[in-house]
Amino acid sequence: MQKGFDGLTALASHVLGADPYSGHLFLFRGKRGDYLKALYWDGSGMCLFAKRLEKGRFVWPPLVDGGIVLSPAQLALLIEGIDWRRTVAPAPVTAPTLV
Image 1 (cartoon, rainbow, N blue to C red):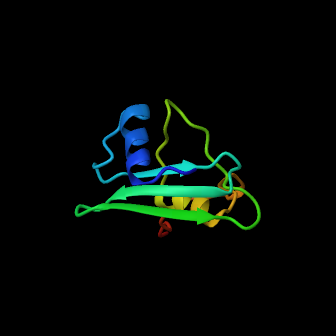
Image 2: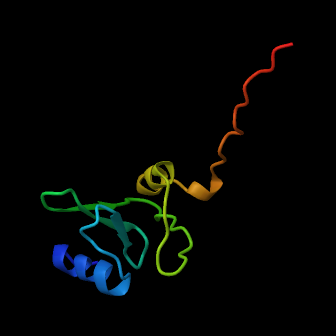
């Protein structure tokens, strides 16, 4: 996981076939699974964030066609190192019926 701005931008562009300057967040995980880098274009420059877990590993969702789309909640769980597969979304709340 030695790549920086240019290397990760090239991976997003050539390997994933995506535009790294689109405003999407690109996540990259190290081989051991305990290191994560996020690449993001904020409109004025490229941002690179990194996180290493002291214990455990990042639970990576299964990839489909080389990439996936995460909800903000799934992204938050992933970055916190929480196993997002074990969390259950609450049932949708329905409006009470008046009798």
